[in-house]
Amino acid sequence: MMSVNFEELSKLVIDGDTDAIKSAVKNAINDGADPLEIVDKGLAKGIRTVGEKYGKGEIFLTELLMGAEAMKAGMEIINPEIQKQKKELKKVGTVVIGTVSGDIHDLGKNIVTALFSAHGFDVTDLGVDVPNEKFIDKLKELKPDILGLSALMTSTITKQRDIINTLKETGLRDKVKVMVGGAAVNEDFVREIGADGYAENANDAVIKAKDLLK
Image (cartoon, rainbow, N blue to C red; front, top):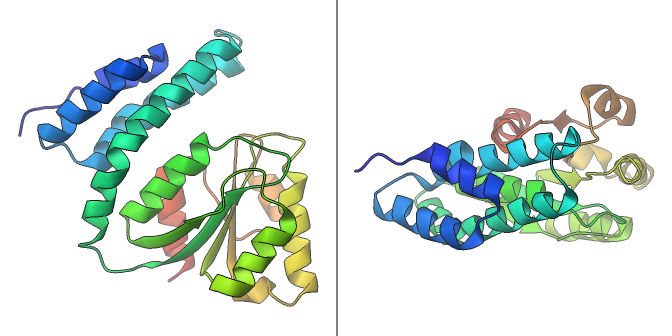
């Protein structure tokens, strides 16, 4: 196995170079790199940097979106590799995940979904802008171990609280572990709304999910 330049992968995401990222990811896979390492040490690291730069006002929205597109292009190549790995894993648990209504951000959710899947979870991704009722309906239908609620904006994290309250009202709260995430979410908010878990990045989310199911 040749050594893979994860820093270069990160830089291509930061630069928003979609074509180059596709080729670099394919090369990394052909060189025998672990798909999860490509995500964690390369792509995810790059998109975190893009997010931080945007948060500090160092780059414009256009550059943030270009980074997101590059990340997405890389993930499209990696996901089939992750699925191949998954076939060899024993099932760890089931997850229903989605971005709450009013919010169309899916980058962080997509990374979490890919890593969950790679670690042996069966994941049903409901997509973005998901109405509260749809989360509840899917919960009743699929009876997952974990419900993942993603919200990137301050204006939409209140939906996470609303869904948890609905779970309590319908007698479903004790039947599922609720994990929340997103840039605007923090530990205080998690405690306040009564969620079971929260993680700042996809790797921690996987560790937390496994802990919750012990």
